[in-house]
Each structure stands twice: as C-alpha cells, then as structure tokens.
Image 1 (cartoon, rainbow, N blue to C red):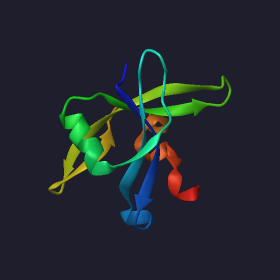
Image 2: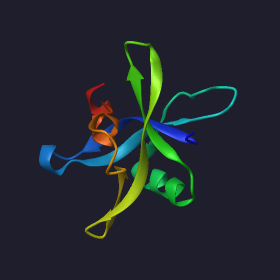
Image 3: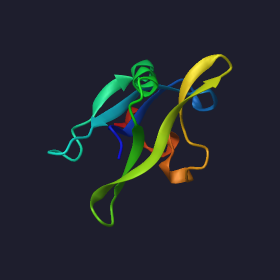
Image 4: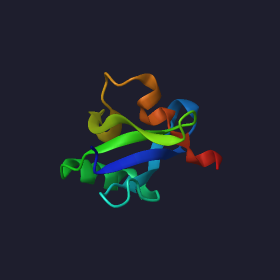
Length: 105
C-alpha cells in the first residue's frame, strides 16, 4: 500500500512542452482510506519520494464507484532535471499523464 496517492495533475506549458507544476496528493491512513487531495508542488513530491515515501497514482473506477490503486510514482533524471514518472512497465491508464488534468476544472 502507498503512503500517498496522486489523483490529478496541474500542468504548465503547451502540449509538446508541458510540465507537471502541482499534483493533487492524498494521504493514506488506517482510519480514513484516502484523505481529501491537497495541491502540492512537484518539487515537494520529489523530496517525499527521495525520503522513501511510497506514492502511487489512483483512478476513479466509475463502474464500481471506488478509487483504484495505480502505478508507483518514481523520480527520474531527464536531461539533468528531476521529474515525476510512473514505472515504465505500468499500464498506460495508470500513468501520471492519464490522471485528472486539474487545469480543466
């Protein structure tokens, strides 16, 4: 089980150069399965992962009306810049880019 889940993303930039600005992060606990999401900057999430917190994506399963755990989120160094990514073997629908685009809300 994850320590935290990401349900949505705020992107900056245009289609071909968009970057993650913030994520909607939900804490997990025994009493409350998933807390209300809070917008957190990408840099803070990267620090949390480096501090060994387990963070995964989550998606709403409309058919069964519940949240489903998705792919593990990792930090990847790309051209000298640290970025959030999902494990490469995750299914396409579990990846960060497939979560709720919070810019549209």
